[in-house]
Figure 1 (cartoon, one colour):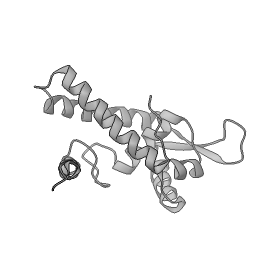
Figure 2 (cartoon, helix red, strand yellow; figure 1 turned 180 degrees about the vertical axis):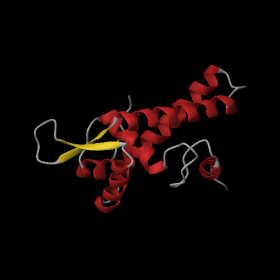
Figure 3 (tube, helix red, strand yellow; figure 1 turned 45 degrees about the vertical axis):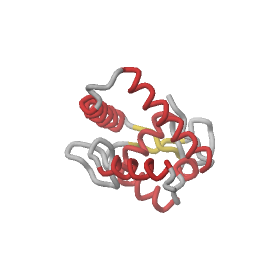
Length: 150
């Protein structure tokens, strides 16, 4: 018997191939790379974060995060500041440029979703969003890495 989760797997695979959301580290013209999008999104919602905090939050090793934060710094998307709480570690903060590019990327994605869901009712969209949130929060719970939501 085929389990219903097989349908979820297949549809998730199909969703990941569409250009509406980031796929791997491919940069869409004028857009952010997926890794920068996720990094900036996390720092925006949580505030300045150290490499160790980012590693724990994103489930990535520090060498990967050093590469990602280095690239983001060179691009002017984040800068390093002393810990606002007085700790020893320096933290990464989103810059005005990073915030602007993140806002632009989100707006493009929402515009694309609006086109895809043009024939959906507001109730259907809200229901879909609720199921996605539930799906994500269950993954986060199992991984032990909850994602703060605005």
